[in-house]
Image (tube, rainbow, N blue to C red):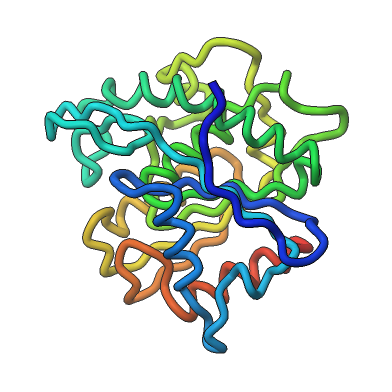
Length: 250
């Protein structure tokens, strides 16, 4: 089953695509609107600053929350986002369901611009889902010569199923199918940002994500800000993302 999404086309010649996953309890349209409203010092949004980029916002299904006993838009169930290690078994089913769908979406976008011009990004639980998608991206979905994404961007994020090695994390998830690519995650540059006043996901979770990915051998750029809450700091956070992407040729 194909995953639904909201897309914002590039304003100029389309050269890159960002696939950005929203957080738990949010939705694709809300995330796209928030991004439009987050500005740099010149009062410009990222979409305006980078006109050759297409933006794709996948939509999570309504998933039953064991803790809240109701259906919520979320990529997978979790007991407590402040303590992702608590009842980790709840996370596995949803991740197994959604990762293959996200892989197909990325594969389709790559057919237009090339995998090396696709940026995978996520906010909060969307970040946790996106990083597991990167770590478990199957070799069978790579075209000849493909060995990296343009970048990975994690915002106000945390690490799901974080283990001491990628292999251990993969074994905990137990995703079936083609062998995951090691080159893809190792070769993809990473940008992670977090605000110290984030009241939903503590900055300590962001630092844990940073340290885990660094231990996995990934090249991580880390930025933290005093304000911004559970989102992107403005204006400096916007400008740092733009500078990171421009350094990669976006």
